[in-house]
Length: 304
Image (cartoon, rainbow, N blue to C red):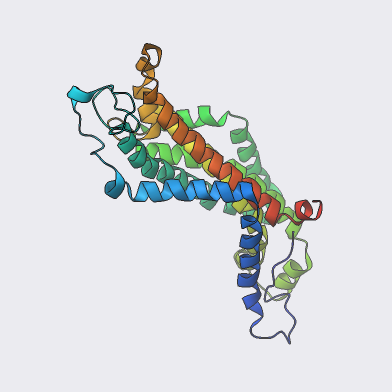
Protein backbone atom coordinates (compact mmCIF):
# COMPACT_ATOMS: atom_id res chain seq x y z
CA UNK A 1 0.00 0.00 0.00
CA UNK A 2 1.46 3.34 -0.97
CA UNK A 3 2.57 5.71 1.76
CA UNK A 4 0.91 9.07 1.94
CA UNK A 5 3.13 12.13 2.30
CA UNK A 6 3.31 13.08 5.94
CA UNK A 7 5.09 15.78 7.88
CA UNK A 8 7.35 13.18 9.44
CA UNK A 9 8.56 11.81 6.12
CA UNK A 10 8.57 14.95 3.99
CA UNK A 11 11.92 16.43 3.04
CA UNK A 12 12.86 19.65 4.83
CA UNK A 13 12.97 21.52 1.55
CA UNK A 14 9.60 20.34 0.30
CA UNK A 15 7.53 22.96 -1.42
CA UNK A 16 4.73 24.46 0.64
CA UNK A 17 2.22 23.41 -2.01
CA UNK A 18 3.12 19.70 -1.81
CA UNK A 19 -0.05 18.62 0.05
CA UNK A 20 -2.06 19.62 -3.02
CA UNK A 21 -1.00 16.28 -4.54
CA UNK A 22 -3.70 14.48 -2.56
CA UNK A 23 -6.66 16.20 -4.32
CA UNK A 24 -5.03 15.47 -7.70
CA UNK A 25 -4.57 11.84 -6.76
CA UNK A 26 -8.16 11.59 -5.51
CA UNK A 27 -9.40 13.05 -8.81
CA UNK A 28 -7.31 10.50 -10.70
CA UNK A 29 -8.78 7.69 -8.63
CA UNK A 30 -12.29 8.89 -9.42
CA UNK A 31 -11.48 9.01 -13.14
CA UNK A 32 -10.12 5.46 -13.04
CA UNK A 33 -13.26 4.31 -11.25
CA UNK A 34 -15.61 5.97 -13.73
CA UNK A 35 -13.81 4.33 -16.66
CA UNK A 36 -14.97 0.93 -15.43
CA UNK A 37 -18.55 0.08 -16.45
CA UNK A 38 -19.52 -2.11 -13.50
CA UNK A 39 -18.57 0.26 -10.64
CA UNK A 40 -20.04 3.13 -12.65
CA UNK A 41 -23.30 1.20 -12.88
CA UNK A 42 -23.13 0.50 -9.14
CA UNK A 43 -22.59 4.17 -8.37
CA UNK A 44 -25.51 5.08 -10.64
CA UNK A 45 -27.79 2.63 -8.81
CA UNK A 46 -26.77 4.03 -5.41
CA UNK A 47 -27.28 7.62 -6.54
CA UNK A 48 -30.66 6.75 -8.06
CA UNK A 49 -31.97 5.17 -4.85
CA UNK A 50 -30.52 8.00 -2.76
CA UNK A 51 -32.15 10.70 -4.87
CA UNK A 52 -35.48 8.86 -5.03
CA UNK A 53 -35.46 8.39 -1.27
CA UNK A 54 -34.62 12.02 -0.55
CA UNK A 55 -37.20 13.32 -3.03
CA UNK A 56 -39.90 10.80 -2.11
CA UNK A 57 -42.25 13.47 -0.65
CA UNK A 58 -42.03 15.36 -3.96
CA UNK A 59 -42.17 12.54 -6.52
CA UNK A 60 -44.35 9.93 -4.81
CA UNK A 61 -47.88 10.01 -6.26
CA UNK A 62 -49.70 9.00 -3.05
CA UNK A 63 -49.39 9.12 0.73
CA UNK A 64 -47.37 6.11 1.96
CA UNK A 65 -49.62 5.18 4.91
CA UNK A 66 -53.07 6.22 3.71
CA UNK A 67 -55.28 3.10 3.35
CA UNK A 68 -58.05 2.75 0.79
CA UNK A 69 -59.80 -0.61 0.96
CA UNK A 70 -61.68 0.16 -2.27
CA UNK A 71 -58.46 -0.33 -4.26
CA UNK A 72 -56.72 -3.01 -2.21
CA UNK A 73 -54.64 -5.71 -3.92
CA UNK A 74 -54.72 -4.06 -7.34
CA UNK A 75 -52.20 -5.41 -9.85
CA UNK A 76 -49.64 -3.02 -11.39
CA UNK A 77 -51.30 -0.54 -13.72
CA UNK A 78 -50.81 2.87 -15.29
CA UNK A 79 -52.13 4.55 -12.13
CA UNK A 80 -50.44 2.28 -9.59
CA UNK A 81 -47.15 1.28 -11.19
CA UNK A 82 -46.28 -1.35 -8.56
CA UNK A 83 -49.87 -2.18 -7.60
CA UNK A 84 -51.45 -1.76 -4.17
CA UNK A 85 -51.20 -3.79 -0.97
CA UNK A 86 -53.82 -5.38 1.25
CA UNK A 87 -54.70 -1.99 2.74
CA UNK A 88 -54.96 -0.21 -0.61
CA UNK A 89 -51.66 1.64 -0.16
CA UNK A 90 -49.62 2.40 -3.28
CA UNK A 91 -46.57 0.12 -3.32
CA UNK A 92 -44.50 2.39 -5.58
CA UNK A 93 -44.92 5.21 -3.06
CA UNK A 94 -43.97 2.96 -0.16
CA UNK A 95 -40.90 1.66 -1.98
CA UNK A 96 -39.69 5.23 -2.52
CA UNK A 97 -40.17 6.15 1.12
CA UNK A 98 -38.59 2.85 2.14
CA UNK A 99 -35.41 3.73 0.25
CA UNK A 100 -34.75 6.66 2.57
CA UNK A 101 -35.21 4.58 5.72
CA UNK A 102 -33.33 1.51 4.52
CA UNK A 103 -30.30 3.42 3.25
CA UNK A 104 -30.21 5.55 6.40
CA UNK A 105 -30.26 2.44 8.59
CA UNK A 106 -27.40 0.90 6.60
CA UNK A 107 -25.36 4.10 6.68
CA UNK A 108 -25.70 4.53 10.44
CA UNK A 109 -24.92 0.85 11.00
CA UNK A 110 -21.74 0.97 8.91
CA UNK A 111 -20.80 4.26 10.60
CA UNK A 112 -21.01 2.59 14.01
CA UNK A 113 -18.92 -0.35 12.80
CA UNK A 114 -16.29 1.99 11.35
CA UNK A 115 -16.15 4.37 14.31
CA UNK A 116 -15.69 1.56 16.84
CA UNK A 117 -13.90 -1.16 14.89
CA UNK A 118 -11.15 0.93 13.30
CA UNK A 119 -9.80 2.46 16.54
CA UNK A 120 -10.04 -0.90 18.31
CA UNK A 121 -8.02 -2.67 15.62
CA UNK A 122 -5.43 0.11 15.43
CA UNK A 123 -4.90 0.29 19.19
CA UNK A 124 -4.74 -3.50 19.52
CA UNK A 125 -2.03 -3.72 16.86
CA UNK A 126 -0.07 -0.64 17.91
CA UNK A 127 -0.02 -1.37 21.63
CA UNK A 128 0.11 -5.15 21.39
CA UNK A 129 0.63 -7.13 24.57
CA UNK A 130 -2.22 -8.49 26.64
CA UNK A 131 -4.52 -5.61 25.76
CA UNK A 132 -4.14 -6.16 22.03
CA UNK A 133 -4.50 -9.90 22.41
CA UNK A 134 -7.65 -9.58 24.52
CA UNK A 135 -9.27 -7.17 22.06
CA UNK A 136 -8.64 -9.40 19.07
CA UNK A 137 -9.76 -12.54 20.90
CA UNK A 138 -13.04 -10.76 21.59
CA UNK A 139 -13.33 -9.82 17.91
CA UNK A 140 -12.62 -13.42 16.89
CA UNK A 141 -15.30 -14.63 19.28
CA UNK A 142 -17.85 -12.28 17.72
CA UNK A 143 -16.82 -13.38 14.23
CA UNK A 144 -17.47 -16.99 15.23
CA UNK A 145 -21.21 -16.24 15.43
CA UNK A 146 -23.29 -16.04 12.24
CA UNK A 147 -23.76 -12.31 11.79
CA UNK A 148 -27.51 -12.42 11.18
CA UNK A 149 -28.07 -14.57 14.27
CA UNK A 150 -25.96 -12.18 16.35
CA UNK A 151 -27.89 -9.20 14.97
CA UNK A 152 -31.17 -10.91 15.83
CA UNK A 153 -30.00 -11.53 19.39
CA UNK A 154 -28.90 -7.92 19.85
CA UNK A 155 -32.10 -6.48 18.37
CA UNK A 156 -34.26 -8.82 20.45
CA UNK A 157 -32.46 -7.82 23.64
CA UNK A 158 -32.92 -4.11 22.87
CA UNK A 159 -36.53 -4.41 21.76
CA UNK A 160 -38.04 -3.89 18.29
CA UNK A 161 -37.47 -0.56 16.61
CA UNK A 162 -35.37 1.44 14.17
CA UNK A 163 -32.69 2.30 16.75
CA UNK A 164 -32.33 -1.35 17.74
CA UNK A 165 -31.81 -2.31 14.09
CA UNK A 166 -29.14 0.37 13.63
CA UNK A 167 -27.27 -0.71 16.76
CA UNK A 168 -27.50 -4.40 15.85
CA UNK A 169 -26.22 -3.79 12.32
CA UNK A 170 -23.41 -1.63 13.68
CA UNK A 171 -22.26 -4.08 16.36
CA UNK A 172 -22.06 -7.12 14.07
CA UNK A 173 -19.85 -5.16 11.66
CA UNK A 174 -17.31 -4.05 14.28
CA UNK A 175 -15.15 -7.23 14.19
CA UNK A 176 -14.70 -6.98 10.40
CA UNK A 177 -13.34 -3.44 10.56
CA UNK A 178 -11.24 -4.23 13.64
CA UNK A 179 -9.66 -7.26 11.98
CA UNK A 180 -8.85 -5.32 8.79
CA UNK A 181 -7.39 -2.37 10.72
CA UNK A 182 -5.40 -4.71 12.96
CA UNK A 183 -3.66 -6.30 9.97
CA UNK A 184 -3.03 -2.97 8.27
CA UNK A 185 -1.58 -1.41 11.42
CA UNK A 186 0.74 -4.36 11.98
CA UNK A 187 2.11 -3.93 8.46
CA UNK A 188 2.54 -0.17 8.90
CA UNK A 189 3.86 0.17 12.45
CA UNK A 190 7.47 -0.69 11.55
CA UNK A 191 7.63 1.53 8.46
CA UNK A 192 10.17 4.35 8.33
CA UNK A 193 7.66 7.19 8.55
CA UNK A 194 6.19 5.65 11.72
CA UNK A 195 9.67 5.40 13.23
CA UNK A 196 10.26 9.02 12.24
CA UNK A 197 7.09 10.03 14.05
CA UNK A 198 8.26 8.24 17.18
CA UNK A 199 11.65 9.95 16.93
CA UNK A 200 9.92 13.32 16.76
CA UNK A 201 8.14 12.52 20.01
CA UNK A 202 4.63 12.10 18.59
CA UNK A 203 2.16 10.36 20.86
CA UNK A 204 0.47 7.12 19.85
CA UNK A 205 -2.87 8.84 19.02
CA UNK A 206 -1.03 11.42 16.91
CA UNK A 207 0.84 8.72 14.98
CA UNK A 208 -2.38 6.80 14.37
CA UNK A 209 -4.29 9.85 13.17
CA UNK A 210 -1.53 11.46 11.09
CA UNK A 211 0.23 8.41 9.66
CA UNK A 212 -1.61 5.11 10.10
CA UNK A 213 -5.21 6.05 9.28
CA UNK A 214 -4.43 7.85 5.99
CA UNK A 215 -2.46 4.85 4.73
CA UNK A 216 -5.20 2.41 5.78
CA UNK A 217 -8.10 4.39 4.33
CA UNK A 218 -8.30 2.69 0.92
CA UNK A 219 -9.12 -0.87 2.08
CA UNK A 220 -11.40 0.53 4.78
CA UNK A 221 -13.42 2.38 2.14
CA UNK A 222 -13.73 -0.84 0.15
CA UNK A 223 -14.94 -2.67 3.22
CA UNK A 224 -17.41 0.12 4.02
CA UNK A 225 -18.93 -0.06 0.55
CA UNK A 226 -19.28 -3.84 0.66
CA UNK A 227 -20.51 -3.58 4.25
CA UNK A 228 -23.36 -1.29 3.17
CA UNK A 229 -24.83 -4.12 1.12
CA UNK A 230 -24.72 -6.46 4.09
CA UNK A 231 -26.12 -3.76 6.38
CA UNK A 232 -29.11 -3.19 4.07
CA UNK A 233 -29.82 -6.92 3.92
CA UNK A 234 -29.47 -7.34 7.69
CA UNK A 235 -31.70 -4.35 8.47
CA UNK A 236 -34.38 -5.62 6.07
CA UNK A 237 -34.12 -9.11 7.58
CA UNK A 238 -34.59 -7.76 11.10
CA UNK A 239 -37.66 -5.81 10.00
CA UNK A 240 -39.00 -8.88 8.19
CA UNK A 241 -38.68 -10.87 11.42
CA UNK A 242 -40.37 -8.15 13.49
CA UNK A 243 -37.17 -7.11 15.28
CA UNK A 244 -36.49 -3.88 13.39
CA UNK A 245 -38.74 -1.22 11.90
CA UNK A 246 -42.39 -1.81 12.76
CA UNK A 247 -45.53 -1.52 10.58
CA UNK A 248 -47.01 0.60 9.14
CA UNK A 249 -43.69 2.37 8.52
CA UNK A 250 -42.75 2.00 4.83
CA UNK A 251 -39.59 -0.10 4.95
CA UNK A 252 -38.62 -2.78 2.46
CA UNK A 253 -38.30 -5.61 4.97
CA UNK A 254 -41.62 -4.67 6.58
CA UNK A 255 -43.31 -4.66 3.16
CA UNK A 256 -42.06 -8.17 2.36
CA UNK A 257 -43.15 -9.37 5.79
CA UNK A 258 -46.66 -8.03 5.22
CA UNK A 259 -46.76 -9.76 1.82
CA UNK A 260 -45.92 -13.24 3.11
CA UNK A 261 -49.50 -14.46 3.24
CA UNK A 262 -50.27 -13.30 -0.29
CA UNK A 263 -47.43 -14.90 -2.23
CA UNK A 264 -49.25 -18.22 -2.67
CA UNK A 265 -52.54 -16.55 -3.63
CA UNK A 266 -51.15 -14.86 -6.74
CA UNK A 267 -50.48 -11.29 -5.55
CA UNK A 268 -46.86 -11.52 -6.67
CA UNK A 269 -46.25 -7.77 -6.79
CA UNK A 270 -46.56 -7.30 -3.03
CA UNK A 271 -43.17 -8.88 -2.31
CA UNK A 272 -41.53 -8.62 -5.74
CA UNK A 273 -40.95 -4.87 -5.90
CA UNK A 274 -39.55 -4.35 -2.38
CA UNK A 275 -37.44 -7.46 -2.95
CA UNK A 276 -36.07 -5.99 -6.18
CA UNK A 277 -35.34 -2.75 -4.34
CA UNK A 278 -33.25 -4.64 -1.77
CA UNK A 279 -31.48 -6.67 -4.46
CA UNK A 280 -30.59 -3.70 -6.67
CA UNK A 281 -29.33 -1.56 -3.79
CA UNK A 282 -27.10 -4.40 -2.55
CA UNK A 283 -25.89 -4.97 -6.11
CA UNK A 284 -25.01 -1.28 -6.43
CA UNK A 285 -22.85 -1.23 -3.30
CA UNK A 286 -21.16 -4.53 -4.20
CA UNK A 287 -20.29 -3.31 -7.69
CA UNK A 288 -18.94 -0.06 -6.27
CA UNK A 289 -16.94 -1.91 -3.62
CA UNK A 290 -15.37 -4.25 -6.19
CA UNK A 291 -14.49 -1.28 -8.37
CA UNK A 292 -12.92 0.61 -5.48
CA UNK A 293 -10.86 -2.45 -4.59
CA UNK A 294 -9.56 -2.74 -8.16
CA UNK A 295 -8.69 0.97 -8.38
CA UNK A 296 -7.24 1.47 -4.90
CA UNK A 297 -5.20 -1.75 -4.67
CA UNK A 298 -1.99 -1.24 -6.70
CA UNK A 299 -1.32 -4.99 -6.82
CA UNK A 300 -4.60 -5.64 -8.63
CA UNK A 301 -4.07 -2.65 -10.93
CA UNK A 302 -0.60 -3.75 -12.06
CA UNK A 303 -1.67 -7.37 -12.60
CA UNK A 304 -4.26 -6.40 -15.23
